[in-house]
Figure 1: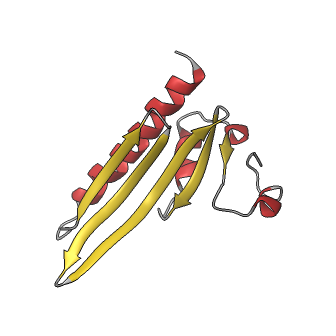
Figure 2: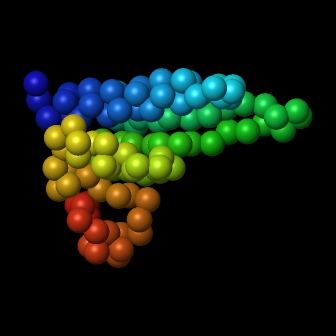
Length: 113
C-alpha cells in the first residue's frame, strides 16, 4: 500500500474510533459528523446540534494530507491526535502541527512543513 493510501486509512480509523467512543458516553446526545474527502484529502470530525434556538457547530479535529504529510489543522481532543497517530506507527517527521504558527513549529518535535 502506498504512503498516501496508508495515511488516509489510518486517519479515518482514528477519527472513527473517536466518534464511536464519544457515542458510548452516557447522556451524550449531540450529533457528530465524520467528513472524509479523499479527493482533496481533508478529514474532519464535527459536532452539529441545536440547544433550544441556538445552533451549535464545532470542529473537534481537522486533518489534511499534503506533500505526503499529515497536517493537523485543528485538534480539540484530550490526548492529541498526533499522539494517537504516533501510536499507530506514524513518524513525528510525517506530522505537522499546522494549528501552530509556522515560526513556532521549529520548537516542536514534529515536522515544520
